[in-house]
Length: 557
Image (tube, rainbow, N blue to C red; front, side, top):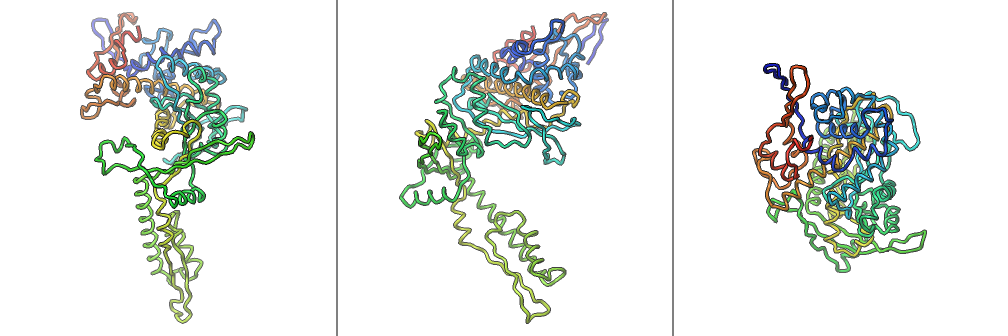
């Protein structure tokens, strides 16, 4: 917005959360690290570091603006905040593309230095690492991706909204301390997850110099069902690293549990209250019970046998949902079979094959409860007008037998954690949701300029900068929440309806500054003579106080 008063022009620019994100980026030293590893020729007037910082800023303030960086820089008055820029047009596709080209081969080294600084400056703990992967979907007119060694490959994926896209897989390690991303890698769009866990952990150890921060024996890697394959478990055990993860229940696991119960072992309560249950009366909360035993896992290479804990967990909420789902499917199948029974001998329901086919198509579909039903089409020659009859039986005994396993799943744990109590192992694993924090700003369709993303290496470099943004966002959220917890004073008025909160999320924190602005004063010749930051409201003041930021002017001074 422009106003003119007696030859003086006032220009208002929205700078939004830049007030929050800039101090973190400067403290981490992103610009300096990138300039060190990706130097420019002496005659260049804009270093790779400042372009990288601005790409991260753009992603955090307005993700879709990546499609047009110069326009974003113009709207946010970036030239007034970054004296290195003479014009917003300097952030064109060619300039961004050159950064992404040189960044690709150095991204692991740069990330390792960033994480090392985060550990030292913010006291980030690496004792609990949560591993997971996610599909990243890119929509746009991308050029054909040529196969290049050691470069991830975009592969077609289907977006549930109905739009065909190209995708990569993002593998990430996040800390139990705030869900911060500490390692990631872009993989082929169709890559399998299981073989990635150990090599990616080893790469993290190498580049972040993890051994200099804490002994590997103190690390616990926590993952989902794809992590604890036998091969991965042996690899963790050889490294001396502890791990916890769920495995698919096999019949051998069920038989062992039956034998344990027959031998007199009993389920015991695992004290844990999920956040969604925290405000419920105790009687309405999910109840978790557990039963564990140890097994020996033998390493065929060395002949060494390792002790591994198997913890069976039963969740009352999962059991209730499984029972409800089964009953709903049973009722739906029976209703459809009974409808088809009335159609037998009519229309084209005149052969056993067609009748069975229609039951499979209309009643069974993909419902798991179909295994309890047995069908029979009986022929009655004495009834020429209605010779066929559809009959079915329900295996109620088998259904009751399977219902005994409702809500039960199996966790495996190895390494030093094998000696921990069942409740400790379970609580450690329940923190797996924290890995979602590091994916929070990535699970969107990326609207980006296909001009500067014409190679897969450039896309992988862009993911690097996006993950830097996730790290910055996570550090901001963690710092605010720690400050509020230390003084036991909430931020007042941040939540809808002016409610208070002790645990504000990063989207809510960034949103509080979405409309924050800067007024640029120009003289009659168009030269900038002054800049005035808007007055902070009460919520913004509380956030800056929690982050120990004096005032916006000091950030860009």
